[in-house]
Length: 340
Ligand SMILES: NC(=O)c1ccc[n+]([C@@H]2O[C@H](COP(=O)([O-])OP(=O)(O)OC[C@H]3O[C@@H](n4cnc5c(N)ncnc54)[C@H](OP(=O)(O)O)[C@@H]3O)[C@@H](O)[C@H]2O)c1
Image (cartoon, rainbow, N blue to C red; front, side):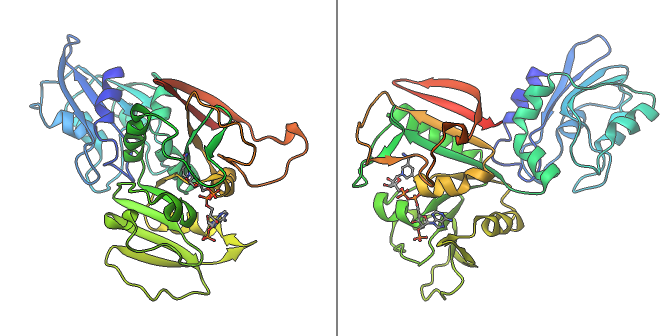
């Protein structure tokens, strides 16, 4: 199953809205005879990729490992269960059941007389496909926030100076994290104050009053979706920019509306990279936080905080998250947190 997970990760950033899946086939003597993975959306599923490298009979009486329940319905490709049955596998070992209600591969395999073992390394398998699980179960976009702070939780000084809080290794990791998400999202304020490049195929900018300059670096590449007040009609044109009229609630763009639009656009996961106010607005909808921390202290209460969106008088009102991982990118660290 570890090999399946490693293979599955090769498809990272390319399979959405499909999951990440890897597969290992053993012959009846327990020798690995084939491996496969889902390389990109529209390509063969991992089981099909592995089995099509074999002749019928090679895997007879053998075992197939896969991190997600094999599909049993016709989608872009025929059901993987049919191919598994055709190859005469004796046992199928599955990491996790498919949250897609259309899939009932386990029953189909058992009816065909194949032994099915479920839930092997289930936590690791669920973690790998956390976006797919949320998409399937809740029919919504997975939301993550990335923030880079000092030890005292600051993301910029009071006048907006922020380059650079973290070191090159941490900033390089941010580029790797971005690749895992269908889109990255930021604010007009961050675009106007930092002029970030933020390389990505899909970028979302929240710009209520259309104040960002189309010559800003962020507009140089990628498909850009600009959410702005429904009261305005954009007078500027650029091939890679789509404007989306958005209702305004309490002076800010309506975040629930934006998330629904992103889902409709096929953006299954989004990484929010903005300042404290927008991070705060997204917090109620956030599944995961990446918090890089540099061993530095600003020491100024008026400096900007990573979350700054309300007044709180009792510490029990603090939002709680669960620590999933701590990774060193020396001299900085990265905390990965999930909603409790
Ligand atoms: N260290 C880091 O990880 C990091 C990352 C990004 C940014 N930053 C820093 O963060 C600073 C900006 O932080 P900030 O708190 O002033 O601004 P911000 O959180 O980046 O953006 C706030 C702006 O977002 C827009 N917005 C639209 N809808 C909103 C809603 N529902 N709720 C809240 N905002 C909404 C508003 O601008 P409109 O009215 O124009 O739409 C609002 O002024 C910059 O100095 C930048 O350097 C740091």
